[in-house]
Length: 212
Image (cartoon, rainbow, N blue to C red; front, side, top):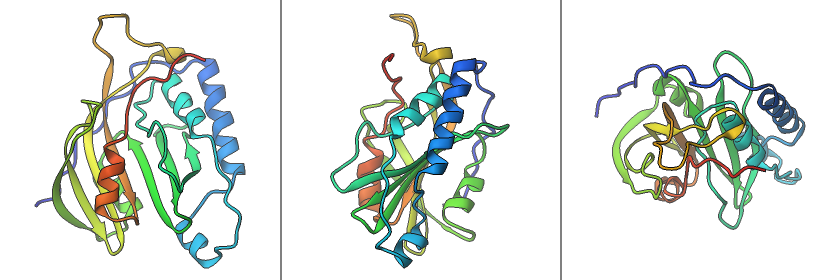
């Protein structure tokens, strides 16, 4: 299978509100201060304590800024969210890091732009493109064929999807109206094996969180 790159993502449809920016900055500070799991670090020092973060706040920050966030509504037993980032800047991306059963790692990234650049960061270069996999999902925006790639034990599934986005302050579409969407690259990656990555990708959603 040849490696292709999706077209560059379009700018967001919504201007960031002041409160959305404040929430984004708060989430970023909390995530940086919290213990961020890095796979090699965890493996070299397994006695380090694991600090769980509230990734829902990072979901809300991205949605309030009009970014196409994709996230798991909940995590399986033994899976602990250790980092959730939505940094401000000219090229924002949404990232969730998860420690699995105390040893393995799973991550989710949502970016505007080129899938190859994201895979270079999460897998390393060179990586192998392994074909496509059907990933059924209750969220129709995320259901369908995803591409697979790997580098050693690290594996990734990725897709270009029309992901739902919220308006300023997390506003949803009016009743009966079509939801706003934006093209984004969604990448699920980690060391848990392809089957578990597929199972996890099937649970992801881009649904807007309810108002506080």
